[in-house]
Image (cartoon, rainbow, N blue to C red):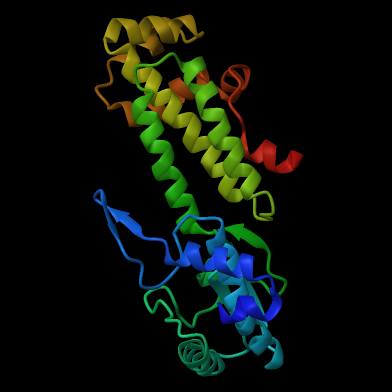
Length: 266
């Protein structure tokens, strides 16, 4: 409140902000008094955090550090590991003494920039680094898609792809600044394989599988050999017979968004 009052002189606004901060918390239907912090998810929280952490920005600028901060996530770039350890200790002390804030020790570390992530991004280890999607972001995205694919097993493929499209577009729009395209190419292939896996599961019987493969242009001998191979859905979804019958062009016609094409377009 003291920091807000430095700039805001209107007592009505200050009173409103204070009431926000003192509002109770409802846990299990019971209202309990708030002792510290701001209401989580409220519009005031990010604004107040930026007002409070403005002192940190000014301190880092005073020390002439290269840094990047977004809300409570901050990366400070120095030339050596020893300098990093010294800066981490001094910034931790500054936040504790001046701003009464604690650093999350489990998420904080002194490490090479390409081994850390910031807002879902990471960078390459080259002299002129390039932005890339952090491995943890890819892993989280795959987990989200796996849940959607499980729900779509018994669904019509075209309708399922329609529902999948906003998720793919949204993720791609967020990572549009990435300069390393390999991960998008790999994800495109993985998504198509998951869709082929759904088809293979839906067919269930050997006769149905052979008939559908022949319908897509595979000769009778190969179709029956593929349908009776005894392998599981995931193996078959990556096999040559499914690739030949359901190539990328098939999914393009169904409206499947290609992450790589989207990146190139953006």
